[in-house]
Image (cartoon, rainbow over all chains, first blue to last red; front, top):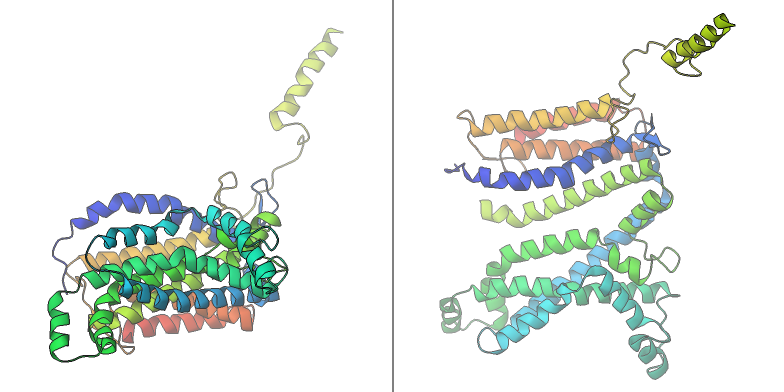
Length: 287
Length: 132
């Protein structure tokens, strides 16, 4: 395949300059930090690849990585099907369309730290609405500040509340782009609702779903603010995800070398998984 | 008395010229080292090793970009052994990402030195450009 017009690259140049300053220069600095030791004052001592070895073999990193994968897996397995179901049940025409769209978009307009603070107050066992209702009305022992399982349920419910709308809106955009003729043809053939979904709606939503899954993967894999504000990584270390652990090492302990090595490993994982997702989901289109 | 005054005036001059505390110390000539800071007063903490690494990566990207946009390659794609449709740039990306994982895996499971994963990475790179 040959691209005819190469002039479009010129329009990408400003973005390239921006990316160079907010991504490329920092990542080169991180690579430099990851092979050196510093005690501040811009003085560095060569360390080689010791930090990488140390991080890869540390139980703390492996535990945080495990929690991170579990979190992202749960998020994707809940949000993607739920988002598709909600998108399928939304009206395609009429006055309720804008109402639904605005309602769906609302959670995404709230800043991350506010979401965390909101859910923190909302779910506190004694004073929060959910905490009070579960403990004192329903009699279910729920305390996300003490019980790791409750903390996990809370951060997952919070993320589902915050980000399912993204999957919904993208799926909905895919759904409304399907011409009526497809549905009419399916009706003539007497196709069941499942067959309509499987052979008409799902293939048409594939591109936007790829984007939705990629965005949700990257966002949930790099999530920091919401769990930090909601649980602070606790109780204990039970909700300390990779990014929270990374910030603890970098800014809490000021171990810039190990933190740089850890963030490069983190980056490599994000890069590989995103590339795999993208490649596998667009593989059929290329052939 | 006048001589003493002259001496008092001249004596600090010698010290100031070299800096206090450095009088009679000679600066040692240090040879080039790959692992010393490259520009100590600059903030990005470059060392010659990491500088060479990025020169290598950007150089490879530049060579492939130059090949791809000229008539020699012009964005030719092919389908390789994994069923992936790749251009030269894709193959470079797979090579670099795979090499990073080879090195990380070796560091995690075996440890230093890293000559074996270097060899593996070269083999992986040749395989990528040849077959993938």
